[in-house]
Length: 448
Image 1 (cartoon, rainbow, N blue to C red):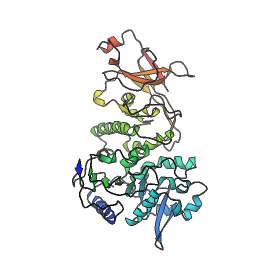
Image 2: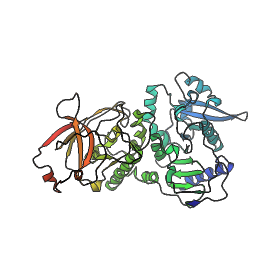
Image 3: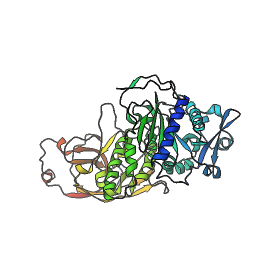
Image 4: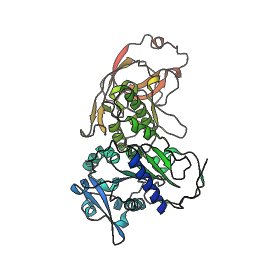
């Protein structure tokens, strides 16, 4: 446990909080390189303009030239919850009205607090997903999803509503806890759970976390908590480490990128989604930033052979399942819900060969977004096993074996992945790989 300093404000909206954010923000701009990868010209399609008129907040949408003219903008990372009111969304029928004025009474408490914080910090624009994307327009949603990574990567600061599981709770709350356990990066808090928040936190250059009991500053140099429990130096975080390697072009840098992508797969795959069809789009921006070759529904062409060796991380409290809607091919970890892991380079020695792999994104402008079809041709030994139902867990041992079954309504030689095991999950298996597959001929199969 770490003791909290006794001089903290009693609520997270106190003026001392604003001063803390301003100091941290100023220090980051002047002494860090957290904005070095930002584009000086990118602006979102739409922004929420914040003004004060007659002592009251006045907000409206701006788009086109007005949005492009914005100096700097903030973003908001938040949990929608199960009942986001339509008055806090932009619909095709309300777009023109919101360009004139967004009714203050219709905004959720989290949105109101975000607007107030934007103005108090001296900014005039903020990007809020449900307001800046036309929610009932598929075309607009697809276009905006394709640039979501840029929206967060090019903001000046992100407000993260960590302590709010829905919009009615807001950013601000009492700070009454006198001690705290080790909780890096706001884990165990509501906005740590949504999958969309995973990439948002790793792309934004600077973040203020409004947690359940205090504020935490988080930039690409590291993290600091307001209570001072972890000291005055930035605490290294995985996103801070990721920022250091996303632009690496060396062979060593590429290996580090692969390692961080494997970590991202594990971290992202355990997160929840309201709509499972968002599984690919919600990681699209991070994939665009890492870029390890041709993107194949969560895997990369540059090391597809190893990438196919993923397994579900079994935990008693977690359930691995297959979404009823088509998300990705059966050989991609994106096709299952639940936490997965990929075999690390030092653990991998290939025993099969990927001959080819195709990827057809639904939107040509977003190659890291939803896909319609992919199928790699894999050459390797095929061994008939007893079908005991889908199981994506991994039995600990030395040889990874993909379990497949003939795909229904497909030509001969076409299979679906239904699980994975490790070789020593079978009793009496010899250590020598050649003896394990003795008498088995290699075959080229097609996975869908």
